[in-house]
Length: 221
Image 1: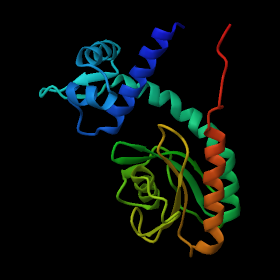
Image 2: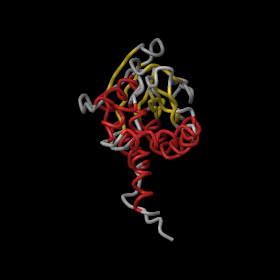
Image 3: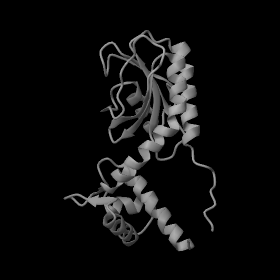
């Protein structure tokens, strides 16, 4: 790959990140300012992204992510699930509660991996693919904290928000560029935060390590 091609790719990826962060869309002028590029350069990038379905313009001319990214997201979810399952199994067995990995999709949280404990008499049945607003539930609050850059509190505790009688405890998965995720547990039993909290934090760290990209990969032939 030539230096010019690599620079164009890098600019295109930065543009996609801006579109992903802007839920109300951006004007080309705003994008040019954010990227430090000229408007013609931004228009050239947008033309390519629109042709591939990764960007779209609304009636007011604002630019949004295109629906082509959904295909990429659907392909990534099984990878996220496979990487998170070992840590979630350990968390579910040690905590005696249903463990889950939740990712942010816009203003919603999506459960992409769920593991139920094998030894409890009863537990919360939490379905993979479940979706809920980020403003409700421990997983959603952890995602909002991650989105805002807040480090406190490290754990988020809720009760009766997604299901009557259910208690939730979740922590953000930090250090993953471009991915907003949280790990948590949900149970109908009393939740000992002092005992379960460190397990949730450890699981979040384990998931982050499993999903982290290598520092450097050599793609030269």
